[in-house]
Length: 222
Image (tube, rainbow, N blue to C red; front, side):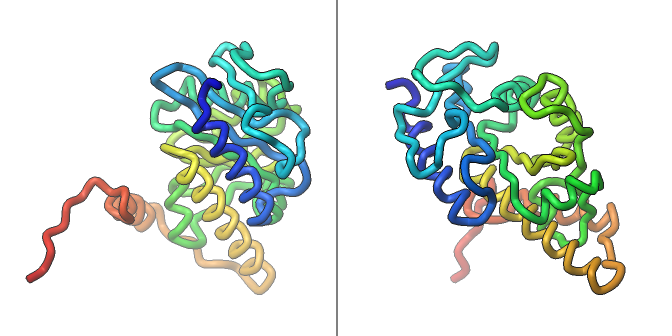
């Protein structure tokens, strides 16, 4: 079975996406790109996340051709493919319909840096212009909105994020949804204070050496 590890991860993270309240029912989709082989695994269309088996996950190339699998791929396969074609730093994509991010997407507004954790996605999270789901136009709008960012909202639709691997992409989705909720709640009380562009530049720089995947070596104190 091609991309067996990637297919198993999609099954695992699909369930996690529902359990984390990032999506409902069969909505949303996940993919993982094997850059060495030039093919990616993606969730099958319209299937319950808790019923998907690894063999149900579809393997495609960047031209939209099915390489392996007997199920229809996610209707958003063009959006995933477009991101992989344009972003060498992204090897996994998570698209969800999380409540607060989707609320902002339905207002067609960007998510400003109300909290520094938005730095996982960039200096802010843009809202891509509306286009019909599954269309080439939506894929193009998404890629444009994600320039210099790891995520964007899709107008009247939801949230999409990319990362170096599935764990990273999923984490970006969680952090953006957290920031979207904070922004929504703060707006209910008053006008939230937005972090400056200069401060966000500092935050993003610090994130490059944050966590266990950072390319930094620390000497143990004696």
